[in-house]
Image (cartoon, rainbow, N blue to C red):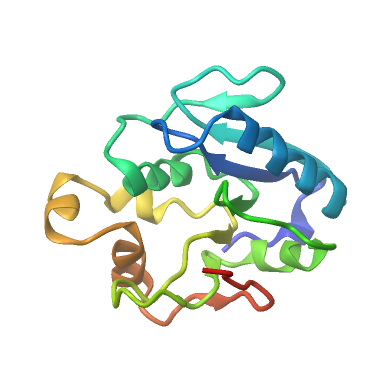
Length: 170
């Protein structure tokens, strides 16, 4: 992986996804406010979306796959240090500790879901510019697997860093 200590002016990028009609731009603005309040350092805030969200740098997915598969396009834009949050994330305090996890190819919480699908919980992810999920993704992956968490688990297995202090209120 990338060694961020070699980077003269590394940029920490915070990403979210707002595709389709499940969430509106108000959720993007709320997440951006929480991040600005609770994460220090040089920040770029980007939203992967087909929409225009004023005051937010928007990047378009290659193809609007379907629901959760859009997240795989995040890895196309992976340069430097990245932290991703789902739009239903609530940040309740300082999250500077997450910056330590941007040195890994992938860091995420272990899956807390009861569905039995996927060992990696993708609601919060950190990575170092690693693009492997984007490079390996194709239509057959969508047809073969239940979702992107299964795909990430297939790629990384147990070889990802576990992020602590991330909880689900579901």
